[in-house]
Image 1: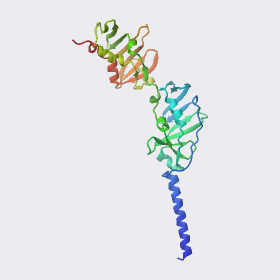
Image 2: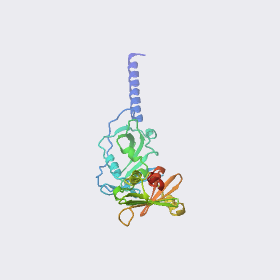
Image 3: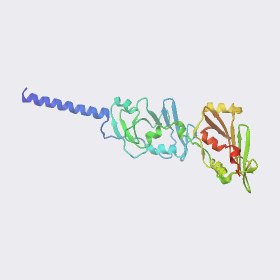
Length: 303
């Protein structure tokens, strides 16, 4: 082989190495590639619907007034919808991670992705597919629908989009300051007692009550929140099974209308609570119910 043939062979090998390097870079995203993901800027007052679909689950977030959101028609946790709005406008520039459709499955931006649609379902402003969590903490892979470019997104957006529907909803049940409570009536399996405030202190069933234990009971209503929610079937089951009702709690202030009237029933290893005037079915843990409805004798003063 003469010198000319050797030079030609070297050029061919060099060209093959360059092509192999580009294939690795673009197909597997092992290095950073310069690029940008341009999303429309959304005003903080937007009333666009944010829809997150994943499998059979769908979450619809709507801003009904400044900073007030609903999640699937229910009140959302204060600030949660605005968090998503801010995350979409994150100033951090996403980096191109891959330009090849063969990477979709590995990065979770295929049919397994969380699909975020912003705007009306028929004509969304944009549709973003949020995929797997990346190696870098607090990051994930995203791509626009109809695009083969996959981006590495650093920020809260991937984790927010992956939230289950119940997490978006407002878990708060009631907040009642201790000094506004005049009495607490509890029914347990047909047994009834009442804790009442008097000029001389607290009583339970007409007998002196342990002041510290009553303070613990009052504190349960300072910021009562549910652990989750029941569906329509749970509500129907509770409505048609009055005989199964196990506990009730009624908190009375100075007015005639109770500050809280809570009915508690257990099913499938959990307690479900409904309050007068509120169709929501709340899920409460056993420890919460025990603290809300302690045995009457346990509140009495021990001499």
